[in-house]
Length: 467
Image (tube, rainbow, N blue to C red; front, top):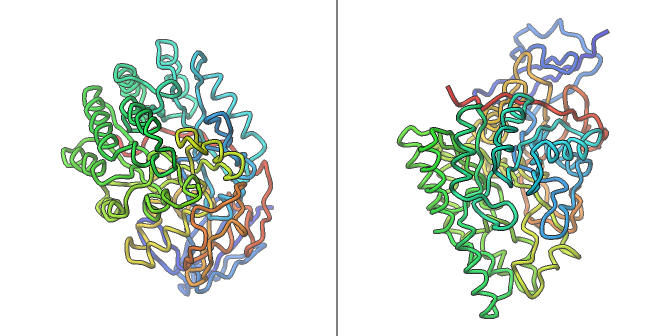
């Protein structure tokens, strides 16, 4: 006997269209859609009917940039795959793509297997992996081919963090050339880490130790310069490039210029750059440490350029870079030395709501909301149309979203395993009501009904924006 769910009377929103439609789900997939009141759905029967009248019916969010259990700065990101994916579900995200990490001196395989082990049996929603390349050499370059074959089709490199993740231009070029050959997409953390380390050392020598100096040493120009350099290296290699967590107007301009030349250059930004600023980093009594992430928060005037980039499609994706560290005991490692504050913010639970607030505020349209949060990340990382849309054959990752509910974001009510919220006290309009993951209810009218182990690993095809 098949397992059928019928969602009636909602406004179905995808990146392509908005229609008042009934949605039939069967055996974990979308079976059919029919315009509400057309009569086509009258004969449909189901074990369960969800009334979505007055609500949006949207694809589950795809967050293509998370760091669960990431080792960083002598500690670990505070969300496990269990707590982090549960929080993601609460926020209407039904797929994450996390980063497996190669350690220097080890192969890609060991790093990837370690992340498979962390996630296996623990996730409430589906997940995939990118691979962080920390040690580019002949052996790891060969391994890239094998990973692409098994569905790990994107590789992150760092122009920042010398001595940890940093790759020099020669290593980056070699990895890009390999990606050109095997179809893998190179993702870049674009900041000039060598220059930043000089500025960090000089700031600390002057006694500038507060969190706000984290933003001051990681200069806009050093993000723009690295973005420019990454684009030129990609051109030399004939490779596509995806620049992660773009935070500054000048970096957006570099990406826009490259795209204007018809290059396969893509840009991602994150809610923290759209809604927070250096004002947060400057909060007194070390409170600014809560907002230390890299690339850093920028002065407010950069936000307009990021919103414009999202409207003009010079930026295509909004991910979270979710990498939470508790204020007590973790962020506090950097008291007296901002360079020791673990870099990262919690946000996997807040992204869909913050972007809906952007719709309410007039920054983006409803369809663009779904495009940047669901459809484009799914296409960018080889998951579409299984993920990122509501169409026959797609996984039944579906969110019933109440566009009129209001909520106040707070650490007291969030589900991320972290002791503060980056958006504490922010009032937003719109809230997730019910979430289905492959047809199974994970959130049922604001009650968590999911379970660790429901989420499965999803192998990915290569970037679907390349010919």
